[in-house]
Image (cartoon, rainbow, N blue to C red; front, top):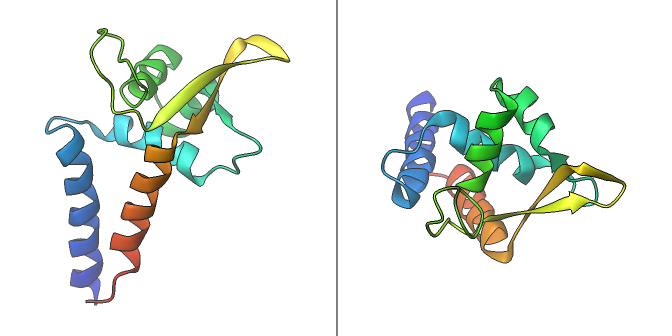
Length: 115
């Protein structure tokens, strides 16, 4: 059974690799933490940085990889969006796009599949 769990983990990692063959683990985490969050209480970039153990600048860059336009002005993956917090303008709130919800569901499906 443990082998099946490891196979599922590999399939999840491959799903991220399909988005970007060179994606690093902190970048994956910057998508997964907002996925696990209640949509009514979105995480901030700072919270993602703390949870994934990276600097805020790195967390910001990692989240940007999943937005519409990456920091290099290239197309991002369009799975996350960031919006200014109206109550605290220096904060950016992170939420999933429809494509982000679909990718999350794909990952959950991999994990729930009984092989």
